Image (cartoon, rainbow, N blue to C red):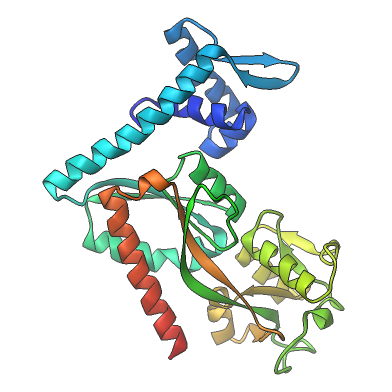
Length: 304
């Protein structure tokens, strides 16, 4: 979007919160407030009422928001129309990925895509699944790739590949030689888990519920913010965990950790998430087609 002020306004108007908009846009709150103030000065009217710690749109704000929605959609259509004429695959895309995907899946995918499409500038933002979905909802990123379920029915969600989750323990742990492991056995030991909002954590919580364990089963776990931190804590003997099998391949080869299949098995889906109007942008279509092929090859290699 050429006018940053309108993009900032759109985020605040959707969320009705300067604080949340600042988080989604990766800006400071004073910077968000400054952009809104500039837009209000341009229109010579207030766009938001800020009373009693609540934010609401004024009449002028409602009108501005309606037109901003139209402007964003038409801008996207314009970009697409020009690229259809030129046939060029160029421009920029901002991707968002949850932590596991950004660390273990995206580097190879984006590297290969960039080699074949050097005119496309790719930008990446990393957050947990909840944060990535919020960025897609607010048009902060063009495409999200997440590891957890997406409940917003206004977004397009497309499954990319299947991911197996396994129990992970230190190589010398008393459970290390078991052929399979029930999650109830795991909870007899100190458990290390991801933070609230993580797709991995959400999948594990649902799995625990399916095994008859309540929502407080992970209440006493050590919470860490990335797979690398969880693996480091396991190696240090601080506990055991459940992680994506793709995230521990290096440690398994080095003999530092041991994985054990869960009984019953646990898997999840990696998915593409995007706004509906973004689908027809040519650069996006090329990246999606490339990613689909990449995921298909990855799944084939996994099965053989």
